Length: 248
Image 1 (tube, rainbow, N blue to C red):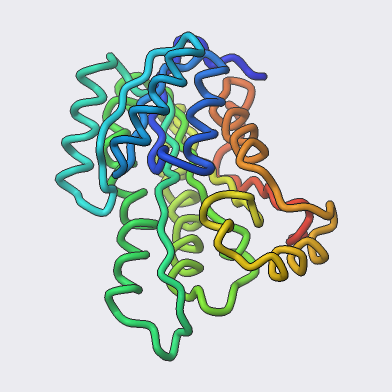
Image 2 (image 1 turned 135 degrees about the vertical axis):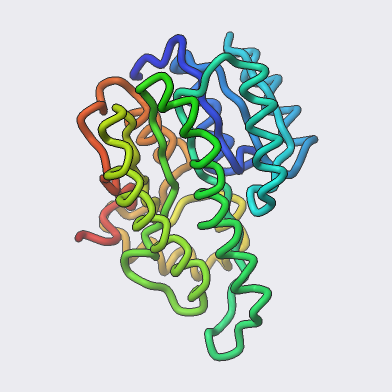
């Protein structure tokens, strides 16, 4: 795997699923990893696992929908580590429902966490990266932002907005040698998809050319690549990790 020795990464939504696997993969590649989420117990367990791989770990409770918590969390990370090389904006929630009957609080909650949260974290990460004239920002979008999904208007809108945010910020800060990319996972085996009935999962598999749902490790490997020096000439790109589900 690509070497991230000497790098410092921060992963939001790190307590489970793609975020957790990403934090472990970054540590295996040699990075020291700050992990942020709302569940402190899960973060503590993950920090121990990262330390077992020989990397430094720092857990910080953070709700990315809360601007003050984001500021405090990044301040704590930058007091623990002297720099921040990699930011993975992974934190996300769902509040599914048909658009006709969707409550405004469900719309607002998803947009605030999945899109505004990434913006807030990016704002806090940029000063350190700009001073160093180097950095990697990786946003976790979704295949549904590209193909749509009934009953998820809020989630699709937020993830679609995240793709737009990726491209806009990539153009703004390219001159500082900071790249901004997104990974768009397809249907991945995570706690978020575990709640789907088995019949729905089997039907989904028939739509995926590779014939299986992805794993969090599949997504984490793509993130590690985009965080590496080898991806230094890639910015504003959306990397699909979907088993061929959506061939754009």
